[in-house]
Image (cartoon, rainbow, N blue to C red):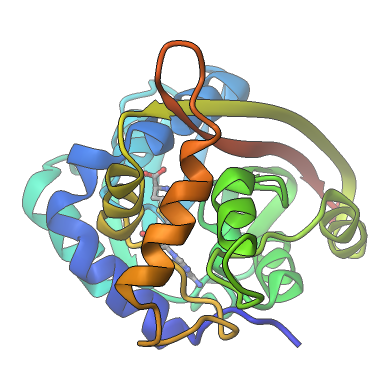
Length: 263
Ligand SMILES: C[S@@+](CC[C@H](N)C(=O)[O-])C[C@H]1O[C@@H](n2cnc3c(N)ncnc32)[C@H](O)[C@@H]1O
């Protein structure tokens, strides 16, 4: 059983994060830029940006010459509202919907692009089924997601305090590949690590919260984390400072390319 929260809770968390999201989304920007580069300039026709957030990728894809329209889809109404208010491009359309149950016509999209949204889906098989269903024959799915080594320093620091699950868990490459091979013709996964450096543990926790990415796992210790627990976790994390006095936060990034089975 997945330990991820319901789509309603994910939607609420990201809707609340929408206003400040762009100010703190440094990691998301790096990953999105990497994905855009990975897709290259050759995208054409109808594109879908699944889990579009504040539309950073949607708006850039809509500027590509061969792209006729980009449908930005997100489960969080607050994110879609933000996009409607801030992105004025007739090639962009917006939809509040769950990537695991897309109300989109079969075989109507040339490319599905998705950056750092997959890891929020409890039923990744449903996400892959839906993505492959909406793709035209020969269409491609390009995505980034996070692997199990993500936030390993924070997970380790909490493990020095108690046995509760304080940090989100991420699906392994093997599990992703198994689910994807059932839905797509060809699947490739590349992996790289991004390490961000912080001055204070409190800055790390604040940023994760502002991103809507604080711990929503069901094994979380709701309401029971005392100041003493937090201090002990902070003391443990402090031992990870580098020679320059900075604290690391690692993200294991998977970049996925898959081609549609149909055709
Ligand atoms: C980390 S943000 C990334 C946003 C954007 N792709 C970017 O790179 O800036 C993840 C987004 O996925 C959305 N999301 C999470 N679960 C989803 C689902 N089941 N269906 C659609 N969107 C979802 C969230 O609401 C959030 O806006």
